[in-house]
Length: 339
Image (cartoon, rainbow, N blue to C red; front, side, top):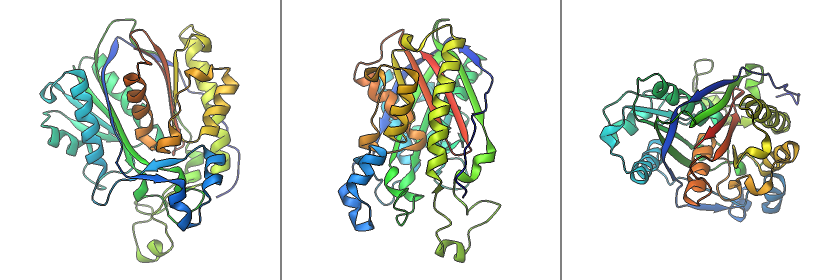
């Protein structure tokens, strides 16, 4: 993979008001994997901290699937909201680590919770939850859903290569969920943007296992079934992307960066988060960071952080929250949510 610069492509800005989040929930496996636990793989614990800010991550136990984590997060979300599973009429899951290539993992969540509703997956890698959230909110906005369950979950430990010392330590496993329904006109997405740039698809990808290159023994021997990332151009692209899209959505909403109460960026790397916050001039106290404890949980990252912030009392009625996800595709989504 070439070390090249990816330019941020500007996308259209939209609004999606009248939607409210009524519940959050999350789940991470109990198995804590500290940096020191990775030294047997040749990983340097202090290097990991200096380059990523990550000190530990969670790995799912053998036999635990993406649907298991997603279902627990959804159950906690329902419990927190006081709503029942039979009230849910839509399930959307953002993931790129589905239980199986087919069928959709969202159907497993639907079945295990006893929900009578359509269910489908959205595959947008680390932007998966933002894509899923906006998709579900659109169903609510047009009246075809009254209560939508929107989930992000990934079991990255199954697709990260233990022999890749620069990539393997970055990722952890986790899930988060939200419930949304119709709300007041001052709630919902004051502005959002979604985008993609497929010219960078090879910067973050899994080479084998799709129709382009089905699974074969020589490929497995070469580790082609594992994730590959060209970190330097992705890092630079992500920092530029966050700054430009956050400014775009705040401007569209008639607000300034200083008007934002909480920033939740995809928890990929603390250096990306810090650099973007500095470029934006954002108050560091308003920028949520938990990548040090969970690593990069891909589609689980933003809903996990959102649930953590809500339970910590950092989100109140009327709070203005920036959510920004970015990753393989290359795909991204940034939204200004009014709680």
